[in-house]
Image (tube, rainbow, N blue to C red; front, side, top):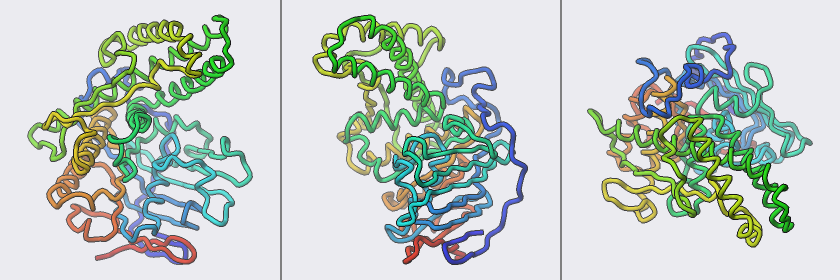
Length: 436
């Protein structure tokens, strides 16, 4: 069923399954191993895709109501700019922790001018079980507490979404990643790290919280070391986890890119990735070694660095040491050229390569291919690269949601797909199934 605002067109409904009872299932954790130490190695011979079978929106962005039954197929959305295509991808991206692909707060998501809250309901097939996710916000609540999430009808924290399903995306706003500021690259890397280790989000929250407290002391010119000790210990521990998770993510991407150069080499360029630190590298290679030992050593390094830097930090009014100062550096391997100096097309190809590598690494580590959201990607690729992208998605077996301005961009997309035309009307966005 595909329901627009005013009407319905039919499609095959996928047979239902009973909701699963393991919303926190994490294959990496449950198998008692850390695949970050053997990047690129599959968890088993079978890889099942995460399939979003049903999506139901109420008063979300430009949609008064939209209901989509995918049958587990790829979803190809086309229509003019501003019709509401990206809004659907944003709704799917909200099934993962955080603020989705636009980074919007809950107060930005209700349909205007209604402003009476919003709701997203999704039914997924994950590892042979049906899982249901409901996200909603009600009008009148504070922004910080407005978003609520349930998994199979029970309240759940956001980090539980990351353990349930992985969602990766690429949007036009990310085209400036290599030429923009370091903060955007850190966010990009942190989402990748969180896809491998959902607990990365909790470490990041703890780090930001303790850093804000330390910065307050610095601005108030507090000099008693007793005020700093406990805060810096917490900040250093969280910072160590962040740094290790980022290093592991880079190792996983590197291995996944290298594995794509085998019998069926990727058509997208390989990126050489590294973490750069303005105060020098951490004292150990973060992608190797025992996790507990590495955290202890890196925590000690950050703790000492924070203590040494108090006078300098007081003068600046902020903390100048830690993973919030790191940067992700990338080199176009075939040309030995920094990504920031590459052409727009080359930078785009590098991004696609990294998203596909992230998906391959996750499929190998967890046994489940993630959901892929690709916003306005096909239009920026030539025929050969577009065909290569479609081939790699098909080989991966992931369910992809893609947008474009016209159906001709998806004419060569292989296999069965749900093709939806998105139109703007006086009452909001509408969906119509393309049966050609």
